[in-house]
Image (cartoon, rainbow over the protein chains, first blue to last red):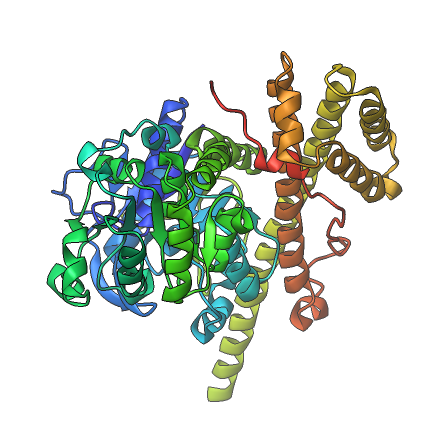
Length: 398
Length: 182
């Protein structure tokens, strides 16, 4: 199949959506499909061969933080040209409601369109207001996919309907094949954490409050902390006698991350909110680290209510310490969690996830016509005629 | 003089809006038809694979008979009892593959792993196809219940789109279980 994928965020900035798009594109190429990814990028930024740059991404405040988005007439023209010249059987748009390439593509295209929603947001007035504006565009989507139950719930709340859930994928074997590093296995047990140090919702503070108690009861235990942020500030929040037990690794690459998980007796996920899926938990499970996570909805689902990992009350450092100590004292329980998790993560492997996504493509692309350009007529995104055929005649913007 | 101009502009704007909306309805109807035939195809496929599983010898005879019966009814059911017999097939499959352990055990038999994976995929596809269909139907209904659309009969004589209501939950055992490559 010829598949066009639209990513709203720059691929050179790390992020859940970008990683998903890149991995998906590569898996689809491996399966023998033709794939073109449209993403924001400067013309002189090096990009993989399957990426079509759609112009510079500009940092703008959006949705409570600063996002790098591509919009404006230049981007709109490039989106139109990419759709017109692509001849795609199916168009796969990520985060279609993001005011970036995704929305532009949805506006400009007709035909079989699949959309994947990544965000889980508590009810927001903005989204509800925007949904009235977005509705004519969103109703062009043939198949709506959410990456997790919370993302699905968000979508249902704002737009109704019955989206399906296809989880984020990962390359399970890359994690399963990781080997522990001997220097991280010394001592009376290894805990690890991954996430920005200074982003409160990643919950490092919750873990550091619990750590002194864990050290008191299990002397010789160590903690690996991976992620960017102010190390000195984090270190200062610990009592002096605990500091030598904590090793800060800074930003880590995928290999180091996998080896850190493989070396750990417990991966702690003390997040306090804002998580849509929890891909990190699945990564840790794939690498063989027993998971101890805060009981967020998303995490509860990933660890199957406690069968694949232990849970503790969100933000409760005492509960975290108790659970961690119990797990450290019980190697048999850790082995049981490892074994159950090893089987369960298979369904998140790209080989299985890609199969589901391709079956969605096949289902929506069954009609006669491929993806075409919508005729541009005010007052909305679609022309007045049943423009399901490709229409190349109307375009002034190349 | 001015009010003539205003009237012309108003009529023109309404005209463009109506024609644009008629286009939206048209496209939604076309997509709905495609989604309906996709759903029919997936339902047909699911019952075919279910029959194959039932007759493959991997199941115990009682379970096999249960699944075969439900699959057969789903294939031969008339249009009016469609949602009912397909829901029954979903329930029968849910009973036959209640948990991951059952599927792991069944998959140890030669050839069973592929067939189970195929059945799992078929059930998932039914679930997806129905939701895609119902999403489109809901969009079409929302648009068609607007008073302007009704007043100008923009939808012509096309019947009001209906959602398909049935139990399409894939069996728990097949959802949590994925064939491992080794």
